[in-house]
Image (cartoon, rainbow, N blue to C red; front, side):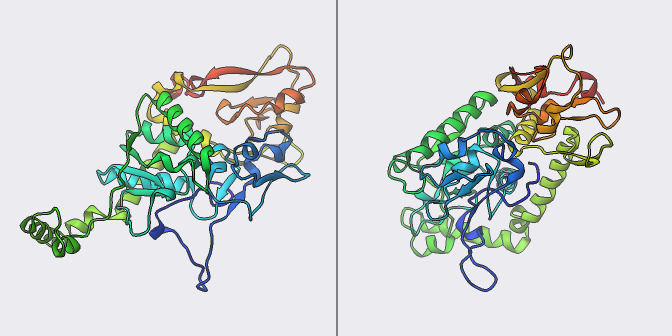
Length: 376
């Protein structure tokens, strides 16, 4: 996923979360606003974050950007699932995706659950990812995971959603929508279980082998010790090795996508620089399409379109575009447009003095590279 100006996401398992500051004091998770990804900061009237927040913790400043009421916010992460402008201070969505992939690379099923389902005394297994709320994951996140062929299961008792003080019924509604949407787009399914896998403890089982044959428990322990002595277990669970393969494969995928994030010199703008910003959710979708182009026809999109017969290259649309999908071409100053960066915000429609721009309904097939590009 695209690099963000700040840390994003929520929810690694408790034992992996940095819960204390260097001086020993508690360092609680916070939700922050990333202005680069906020449409209101660019003049739009979007209110999705405020409408989705189950506790009314999001309001808007006079300048337009969202403001979070720290006392009302429960850190459920629902805002992360509905908008790229919100982030957790602990771990990014890219971090979370990388962890799920490492679980899959170990040959294990990735199991996702929420904090409401983890009771005191329950130690989730290493393949369990604990989230504040399942609704913090977007349809694009689920689609990417499914497109990669990852075996992923949700382990939760949904009856807890109704009484959940963190996210309430809004959490269940949004998480169900995200999963159903991703299943429809990808043509694959997310598994479901009401049992959370627990961390194995062979020494405990040997001491109290209830439901386990004592001879089998001892044999398992001997085999486990043998693996440790031979180094096989170390290799099998090597996070360093998995991270290496993850970085290498991701670098290759991003190279194939050929995204032009960042700034570029441009003599046709007063500042001399133009900037393109890929929304993280759009990049997740692009990565999913790169994995399985067949998904594209099932993903509906709203994108801007220019009537070239009316366009006079005033570039008013480029001046208001929040992502750089529309910008002056550095070569000759005419309008350049990259649909991959367009998020259908509509700001360009109102800005064009000739009425040459409109929003159109299409599918993600528009985002696929041309045939001559795929053959390179």
